Length: 343
Ligand code: KG4
Ligand code: ZN
Image 1 (cartoon, rainbow, N blue to C red):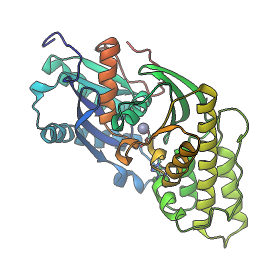
Image 2 (image 1 turned 90 degrees about the horizontal axis):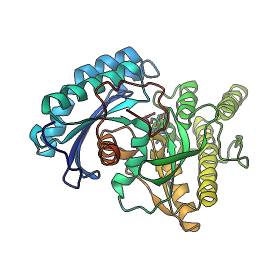
Image 3 (image 1 turned 30 degrees about the horizontal axis):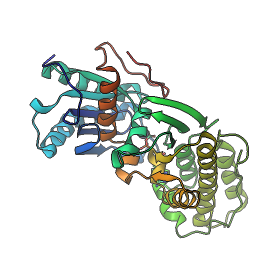
């Protein structure tokens, strides 16, 4: 190692994220001071296929990774000599995509003589909320809603998590993407539906709110089927009304479950994270509920909701602080759960 690493507010972590269709790099100092955050999206490349094509994603990451890291360094105003550790997402995600970021991070860490830190992508989404608002009170209840995951997580303190509820089938973002695909609205579905729903009537169709009063788990596959059946039977229904009604059903369930979990667990703070946390109705409804029920809400900026490397660098800083760097034989784990165990 270059030096005995003291983890403190001056420690600079270079974060790298390549788990899905975003190649991202960021420099973060002290766990929450974002010096730069660069995201190269592959959305345009995958949109014509209606979803992410793993092999194409890996190739695109390979092409972008070096320029994206260079840009993150240039924007931070720092040189490689100021990088104290290199963190990369090791899972969950697409194996070929993950390996690009993990290999780049290990190579850089070895060259610079600094620790490599393997980061869990889901854990990083939890830290994204803290990046915008580092002084939260614990316990915190986080609603993590992305394309691949939907979970309610109790965060007792950094590094100490418990999943208290999750989806039994489709993730919330997956439901947005599948409904949009069925309606020929393009990929990814979330942003398109969010925009189109603003012009529709959310009361037009009374779609089911599955498991609304039943525990903290959620289920969205029945809702997706209900939308498909409704559209098949009502060929002249307005698409804007359908997506507004669909979105309202998703948001009703997410907000109700989040509030119930926060009350049950005695949480002080509620935070949301993941791509679906960019949804304007979810943001408005959860803000309203937190205000009326006196919870402190951490609402990350849009850029911190969707995949980025600042959250990876931040999670890397916390992991270094808690347990030091990772071993160099840590690999890539496509199905990694939200766990604090890692070599
Ligand atoms: O966290 P993320 O960027 O990637 C994953 O780790 O999955 O989340 C992507 C997901 C996609 O399913 C996309 O449709 C959804 O987030 N999404 C949205 C919005 N923006 C992105 N869903 C609803 N409303 C949005 N505004
Ligand atoms: Zn994500």
